Image 1: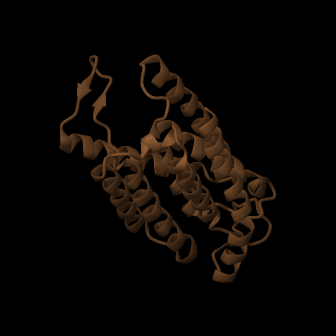
Image 2: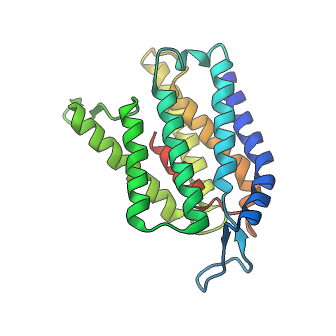
Length: 236
């Protein structure tokens, strides 16, 4: 548990500290959310907050790989690589969308690609709790994984409409998933160090680190960069 706490604190601290420079970068790059009739912010607000969250997530992942207990998660597994590849792709897609605006088919294609790469590299549904345990064939496993990733990404994206809302909801959900994953591994006699619990700890951390900058009136929006990243990690 102490190593999970370290990873959480690193992710939260790095996200919090990266947010001001990312805000300045977004302003210089022109990645701004203009004021519309249905918006609650009174002046143009920079986006790209998700870039700070991405930095916090990577920092926590690197620290986790160096901790003696958590290092077992990274040994002989491509799943951490799958996580980095998928999150990097979705953040790149979000940065472009927040700055220039992308049409829906292009964004959907990018989300499918990110989910597909994660599934190909090892993060995928392999069974469902239907009729006991329903083991999926490889094709169905990949297709369901991609569908679930895309649905979760867009669910979080749609929620991101008020200051602090998406980060607050995802942070609470990730904390609940962490408790579930941590207790479940103990109940079944598995190693307490699991990628699922680590993702949840890091996800909670980046939400906590970002929230002080995103509470009303928000100094920075996470943009699609952040909402799609949170959705991808929550799905993972």
